[in-house]
Image (cartoon, rainbow, N blue to C red):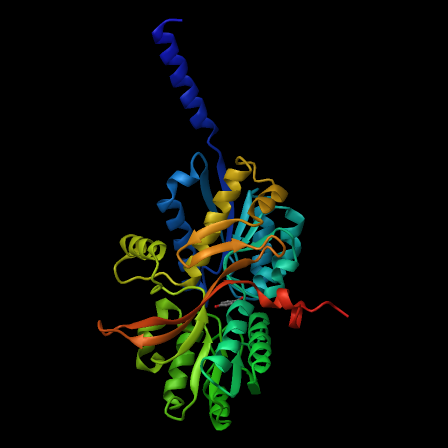
Amino acid sequence: MSKRIVAALAALSLSTGAAYAQDIKVGVILPYTGVGAELAQQIERGMDLYLKLNADQVKPYKITLVKRDSKAPDGAASKIAVQELLTQDKVDALAGWVYSPDAIASAPVVNAGKKLAVIMNAATSFITNLAPEYVRTSFTMWHSSYALGAAAAKTLHAKTAVVAYSDYPPGKDSLEAFKNAFEANGGKVIDAIPAGGPGAVPDFTPFFQRAKDEKPDVLFVFVPAGDHASAVVKTYGALGMAAAGIKLIGPGDIVQDIKLQAMGDAAVGLITMHHYNADLDNPENKRFVAAWKKEYGAGSTPDFTAIGGYDGMAAIVHAAQATKGKMDGDAAVKSLLGWKFNSPQGPIMIDPETRDIVMNEYLSEVVKGADGKLHEKKIAEFDNVKDQCKVLALGPCAPKK
Ligand code: PHB
């Protein structure tokens, strides 16, 4: 064969190879409008940044996002969006879900569609039990709130607590988780106050005034990240609760990085338990935060919701490689059982038994830095934490009688 023919054949096989590079369609369900719009932006930026920073891992596949708005966090729009993505857009995988009611309402459709479905935020523990297609790269309220219940008693030496929580599934999980661990370690929850829902930010004053009058050592609060969290810290400050000797504690949802600076001095001293904040000191996070600022502006910052998107996209890319681009639902889920990833939050793994994430939890305090800005200072670290609701079969994870 002449050299020219060989070269021509080589060129042909290269171009044919490129033509086979498979386009993988991922249906993304996020609240692009309404109360969760900022969270949707963070998750989407996290997904995009993973694809940009890890282009070599993605090759030869091309990931295309087909986006749908889940609107108000009541499940209705999300369920319809999932149905359309599966039947009309014929997506290869699903991803997103900021709010638990959206993931809960979508579960039967996700199950019927038989495609990998990566939960990037929604944090009610039992959601992954509702469909075997669900794999969670975000967190559950039991990861953070159970660990904080133990730390509140053992590290903060609190004896009494009042819990205020957004009255929907992750809030109930957060209460159950905190109460179980706090009371197992000698503390007492003296009141649990339902404080509005996720759809609109309530006035927290009456709830926190009730807590103040009860004079607990700590006020444990769960609200969904976003404007709810800003209002919590503002109300805590306005009621002079710190001066009254009541410490504000909670899962990291209440000090989301994108809201932290605007919280001002009222946030100083706040104690949280969570798997991520932008101040985490590890090489992977330094690289991630620097890349984020380069991409989205020096004044912007990633937060824990962005990490759910970043890690979730890493999971989808892993499944694409493992299934050679086929993305058969069963095989894609199977490829993620026991999957390990070096995330900016630290090492993570998908628990092969529960399809839920295993990750580190960091006990942190909000401090004012030499730069005049608020930062999160790590007090303690707990490695390889599993969702304790499922481990201990407690609360909503207890076997049905
Ligand atoms: C949820 O609805 O599961 C949820 C939303 C925002 C959070 C945490 C949990 O910060």
